[in-house]
Length: 80
Image 1: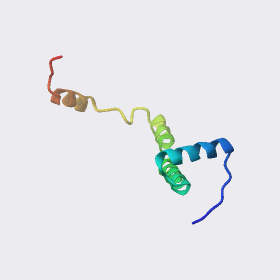
Image 2: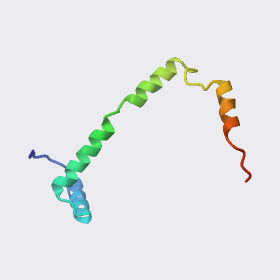
Image 3: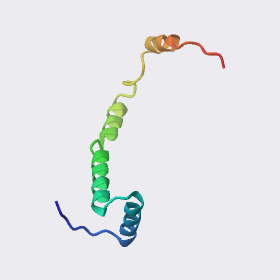
Image 4: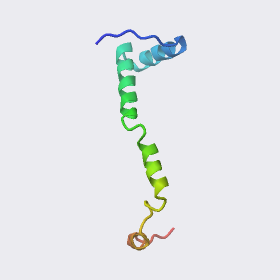
């Protein structure tokens, strides 16, 4: 798919430099950048939603004290 976009000159110049340095075409660089951005945005808002859930129930994510002791006991002792 061909498309035309407008970007600030400094970003364009830096992108051109990076593409040349990495041996990529301009199209490949922009396609990779957009793909990475989309991947990063896939879960945008998840942390905020989890923060809201745990703020509403402050102790909901606490580890059971018995489980915590059992986990600590299962780790072998090491000499430093």
